[in-house]
Image (cartoon, rainbow, N blue to C red; front, side, top):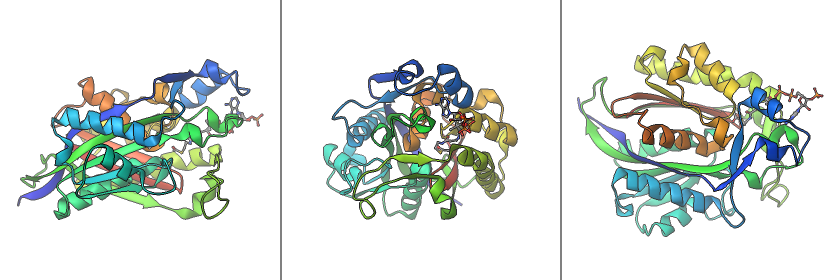
Length: 325
Ligand code: ACO
């Protein structure tokens, strides 16, 4: 029986021009390149220029994704932007991008699930497309985490970077078989009991300030692999796919050790993992679409490939998605 699915039509990304290396960080805090590389796999990250905002990054990624899809902005009737670093408390940064693209129909809104934001946004857009409420969506992950980092805290400032990525999703009828293209399943989880382990110590209704990122790194690390692999096993159980069926594993890029730990526990081979954390650092909601843009533009991910996405982050939130390209 035929079904409506959300098909990926295009992918795009944008990285700010300024590269901050680990050597640059040793001039700010007591750290070393060795420490950062061994614990995280990160060698450098991008930092947005003064005046360059999350909407600027997201807009550039959205334009690149539309160009990659061969579509105009007039095709889009839904924008879901995942970010924890919006331009303003309100309106949603998504409506700025909507206006900059010249779109005056449909809906645009932000979604906040920290590092899991892109998977949550993808799942949300997928629900709207499969329901028939909207036809063509831009799903964007865009972050300027450099603005909420405490640059005196060596435990966190070495981990994060700025960037944006976007995908164009279009509703299309598929045969309803195992070979269907599009988003095949998403699985989302959260558990607010862990909210104090990774948070920002400010906000409109608490301090009236933006605040800075605070993290119990070891605690996040301790939960990460188990939560990630659980929510992937859920997606496998619901679809009948297994690790051996996966062509590409595109994880949230938080830390090389978390990525490899999750892949090895699931039995996914190293040569199927897309890794960008060495050059991007942790760009939170932007990391998955940034990695997707890299692996599609260099020809690794091809039409027909089965792609596994996962993320885990503040909240805690975590989620997985299986997408046939
Ligand atoms: N350079 C040098 N030393 C450092 C640095 C640094 N940048 N940061 C911390 N240290 C020191 C600590 O002060 C501590 O010193 P001490 O033993 O004298 O007290 C020592 O290194 C060990 O500190 P830990 O925090 O225990 O180090 P750990 O091995 O846990 O590594 C890290 C820290 C990399 C943050 C790790 O816990 C981690 O990766 N956690 C996951 C966090 C993460 O990825 N968060 C991203 C957001 S959530 C997500 O996206 C999944």
